[in-house]
Length: 307
Image (spheres, one colour):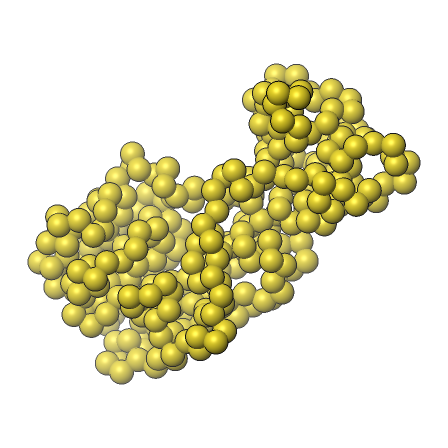
């Protein structure tokens, strides 16, 4: 079987490794972004070294649906294209360039959470279970028949980074079996149950603004969901944007006379902010462009004009 891999992130790296390692597959090329467009993915990976190790060519394109990209793919005549870690919609002409099909990967238990930003949404929705899913791409949104799926539990303190790592481990575990199944000529396909389908909307950096009026548990969930490898949950103080990288909810006993978003305690390891349910969030790691520490009793999240 001849394959092309399309993508630009860690899951793409895993796909390149697995396809190249399979004796039943010939990896014709890796299509990825040019380095100057790496900002499209916060978890961008330069795949040039991986393509070199796999003994295949790398093709850089800004648009996989462009005439140039489509022509290059047609000339390679792939049986399957693996689109793993690519943010553009696979158009009809692109899908037609693969003689047997286009395989996609989604870090969610399809048909649940089709769409965008599913790792942050998984945590924001307090999902207890997730799954990594491989499927055949059709004209819908993550709606094609499943080729493989691996379920796992989420920890109560799961972060975007730990959930991302779990998905990568499941993909690496699952993909060799799916490659073997596809190469057999009659892969096992499971049609998704549309009655169970849900959709996740795109998230932008501004959607990670912390609302300190929320309960401490909700603010903590936001911090965990939006952190590395994503831009991070943030708040502001005056003209400064402060990204909260690590935090934990803590009880407050002596700070009834304080506002939500106010720093009420300090220690050598960080500071505690009061939340809307009169509980606190202890911030142990953060980043900011400020040269000076935040002042005692600073109120975070105020509009800049009010600072």
